[in-house]
Image (cartoon, helix red, strand yellow):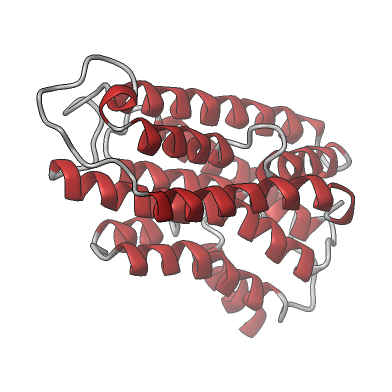
Length: 253
């Protein structure tokens, strides 16, 4: 009974629908970007700590539930305009895939690195979203556009962060997704195909978000662009992500 309870709680922190609604409810009611960042970093780690206490294998049907949960939130993200909600749904979608390496017997420490690879770009987006709220009063697509012209340095960082989130090559999430698909192939090839479809949905959602914020004609407002210190901070983290993705390609497998 105790282990069933642990598995249930793990389904809350490594979000499986409908328990996944808990994280998005919490994130939607958290206004502080620091607290949002902490939630994005620590939520899946709590689930992995619970998983480390299990003494039996995760059942095969959990993989189907993980794929369904991930696909549901990836599809829902296509219609989202709010940057905060978008980041929450992408977090939920990506974290659900952590059940696949867990099922494959991957060391928990490695899966914790997978979770960080998914979470760190989302943390960056949380702070960028807060920056949009300070400049425009809201972080939503369709309310303003043309950020590539009005705040080009901010826009460049935003595009790179979104690319990292949707698992573009050389970022850690890209290699994590390759490993996840390979592991799924050994259990159910159909799940591997489903993961690839969800990955395409991430790319589509990312393209819509970038299009709604970066492209278009800017309005008459003149918001402040990122200052040099902020650019260097974001750039350093992005470079570290690239290095971690390339260097960890063999280690994480």
